[in-house]
Length: 242
Image (cartoon, rainbow, N blue to C red; front, side, top):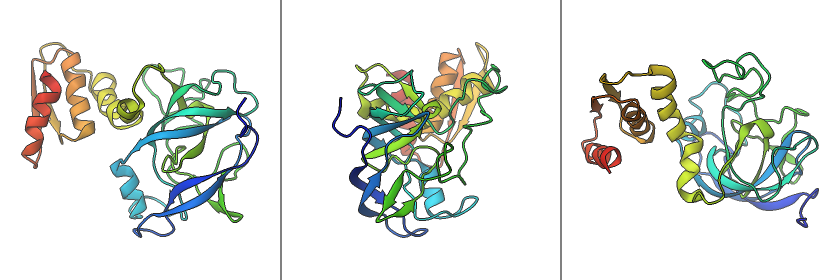
């Protein structure tokens, strides 16, 4: 058993103290996970435009100080009471729209907007007790969309964590926790193109390329990419025809 189980962990995190101000690398305290929570050691994290958008305070309700980041890969360090599906050492991806498994959305094949764990950019605390697991000198630092992966350790609700094959390289599959799953799901689960259809994708960033891949997997005969940045067309061709 890890020597950190049940104890506060002190680690480095990139903290946003104010809107649009440079992030500051701080030593934060990360409390142990409570019921139905897991504490993760984040090994790889990437930057999503959603992080930038809410850091600039262009979103719904500015909330600072905060630890952003939600597209990442890591390892379970410890689990809270009631957690049976994960154990320390498991390789996982945090996900910004979780699943409680019991609500009408989770039981529907047409929706993943969980009543409990759907994305909520205004919430900066854990559901269990309405408190943050991050602090600096006793001052709470708020969470972001259930992830806060710009920290060496973070705490997530069990329904916002997906276990993956430990053989999968975390530095590559970390983008599955947001960008790739968003684009791929938009094509496979929402647009649902049929074999032989023509599909147009606007924007050829990570999400757009994933949508194009979803269209390819669906059997689209023609995929039209639209982007203002000409360099992305070659990247798209490589991604789709590699």
